[in-house]
Length: 180
Image (cartoon, rainbow, N blue to C red; front, side, top):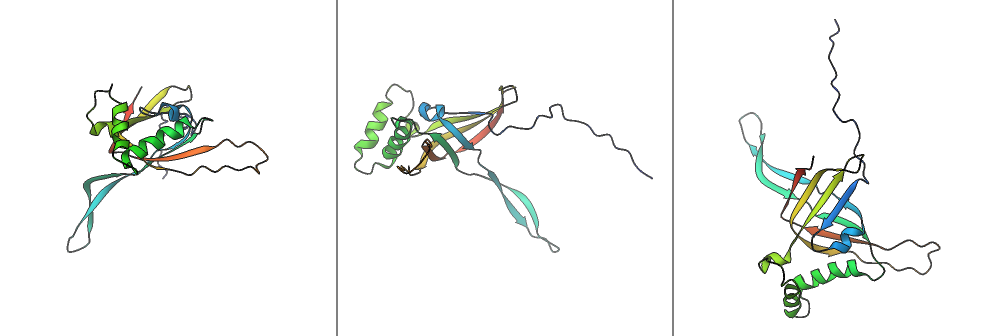
């Protein structure tokens, strides 16, 4: 005997488009404008094994791990967006002297942040629907750059392929918000 089940359709059957997004980093407006690709990082929840006489049983843990945030952007012809990430990294790593960090912090005198908070920025990834309306946003807290990929220049290219920059950021955590 066959059973009948009623299939319920979701309210919205439009699939998510990979090019429907906005991205902004508070301290890097030039990177935000030229952003080409953002990879929404994966998250992991640790688990704990509970031993029993019969088999081990996995239980949810209490520690979340957030992967790094990768951003790809077109580099403007004056390299201002590349330079803004570069200078932020130099200030945090101060390869020549502590004055490099002091200069970075002093540039931000008009902000009301503590000195430690000036090391970080927040970022927002907005997800757009088929009408280009933001329906969800991911907010990344306490973001800072950890890598800036090499730039390759090539005089033998037949076509102009504009130069892309890749940057990787660490952050404390991110939240998903509904903007509907």
